[in-house]
Each structure stands twice: as C-alpha cells, then as structure tokens.
Image (cartoon, rainbow, N blue to C red; front, top):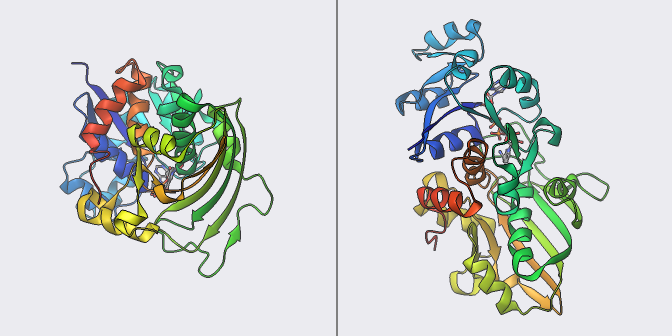
Length: 343
Ligand code: NAD
C-alpha cells in the first residue's frame, strides 16, 4: 500500500487533532510537527512519540534547554514529507506558501487563510473529485464546513435553491485565555452579509446564500439557524431520513435525550469521545420544520474538531490516495469513529 508522509506546521487546536487523525490512518505516516513554543503541548507531543521540529535553527536551543528533543527545522521536515498540513494561525499560512512550493511539497491550508492561498477551497461532501491531484487545497473554516455539509447533502436529493443563515459564533476556543467578549453579543460584522456565505460560494459559486453572524461569550460550539429553499416540496420526515443516512451529520432529538444546548452535547461527548470532540455536524431534530419547499433548522458545530475529517480527505485528494469522496469518507470516518453513538 502507498503510504503518504505527512508533516504538520503549527500544533495548536487544529494541528494537534490533525496529527492524531493522521496517526490513525493506515495509508499515512506522521513524520513530525512544527512547534513554535516549548510548552505543555510540546511535552505531550514528545511523550506521544511525535517528532518535534522548530521553525528555525535559533529555536532549537530553547527547546533543548527544556529537555525537548528537536528533530530539525521546518526546512528539514519539508525535505522528508509528501504533504504539509499548515495549521498555523489565520493569515500565517500564506507567508509559508512559497516555501512549500519551492520544496515541491503539496500543501493543505486552513480556513483562516484567504481563498487564494490554494488552488481550491475544499469540502469533501461538495467537491472532492475537483480537488484530486491538486498541489494545494484550503479546507474551509468550521462554520463554512458545517454549512456545506448540510447544503451539499440536501442538494443531492432535493436541490437547494437558496440559503439564509444566522450564525451564533463562539467567542474563543476553550484554551484561549485572552479573547472576549465576556459580557456582550457582538455583531460580527455589523453589516450583512457576513463572510461565511461568501466562503460557501468559494465551493458552490452558483448558490444564492446570505449569512449574518454574531459572537457570544461561550467557548463550546457555534450554533446556526439555517433557512433553505429547496427545489421540491418536502416533509420533515424526508429531511430526517436523508440526514440520518448522510455521513458526518448526526441528529439529536431533544425529546428523546433531553439535550437542547451546546453544553449538553459537549458533556455527552466528554464521556465517549477523545477530548470530547464532535467532528460531526449536529442537527437539532426537533427544530426541523418544513413548509412546502422551505426548510428551517438549528445546527451546532464543534469548531475545534469539525474540519479534521476534511483535512484527512484533503491529504488523500492531493495525493490521489482515494479516487472518490465515498472511498475517502469510508476510511476516514471508520478510523475516527464518526457517527458512533454519542447518547
Ligand atoms: P492555534 O492558535 O490554536 O494554533 C496555531 C499554532 O501555530 C500554535 O501552536 C502557534 O504557536 C503556532 N504558530 C504560531 N505562529 C507560527 C509560525 N509562524 N509558524 C509555525 N507555527 C506557528 O490556531 P488554530 O485554532 O489551530 O487555527 C489554525 C488554523 O485553523 C487557522 O487558519 C484557523 O482559522 C483555522 N481553524 C480554526 C478553528 C478553530 O475553531 N480553532 C476551526 C477551523 C479552522
């Protein structure tokens, strides 16, 4: 079997999760990760047997002084890998793009980068085949991934004519100690549309979509209120049955489970999932409401983990490891335990 060698630049919220997911794939080998700071995450990576690389030679001493063995620099890592997953903070990946190109390494960027950082913006359920054998892809952000999973799943069966969505964004990830708001609901931005709909159009240019967003003082998940106009008249039951069958989407029945908040979803996940991650899009079943060809629902997105399956698929797409979306989804989802019962 062909085994693709993968490196990860940036070992934060997304980088550490992609590293773990790569480790679980039989057709991928994790060569190492680039750490900026010799902190608790570096100690944990070292204990997990992950090769640690630094950005430049000058950084080696500060890691070694703390007892962290350094395998080399980013340049050394790039000379050993087929694919680099850039998980540096938003906007930083673009600064590395020319380096990745000059080393002849395929690159996967994240949604915090501008769309032109890569040859294509990517979402497995929407455009896997278009991404095959590209040199670079940008996995769209957590909110965009959630919207696209829903839209592309419904589009296949019912046709989607237009989408309107209000996005209630978490303020920060749980580990971020310096970000707010602490006591406000902030229009993000104060004008409509927000950038999320525009980002969806990077993948589905034909779609009529408008989004608006606010940021609220929570760290757990985002919530979307999505309103779609479909090409057919549908019933609630039609929607439920399609979403139930779809990969990467789970339904939560408030009536059956008592769950009606992001806090309860994460509490349930903490019992059964590594880190309490929920890479699936969670649709609140009781909120699904139809009128003719209109559909309205609430969905929740675990921002720290939703893009991880798409990062793994993106590696398979650029290297041609899997010829179709179905092929990569089946490997990725079984290795990550997606759709395993949460409640
Ligand atoms: P993060 O801040 O948690 O992690 C970034 C890591 O990169 C940190 O460990 C930091 O020390 C390191 N770093 C900083 N500068 C660096 C440099 N010059 N070179 C190498 N490493 C450097 O960020 P994150 O949340 O993991 O976000 C990474 C990307 O993923 C961003 O584009 C973001 O928009 C996107 N994203 C984030 C989320 C989320 O909710 N956290 C969800 C989806 C997509």
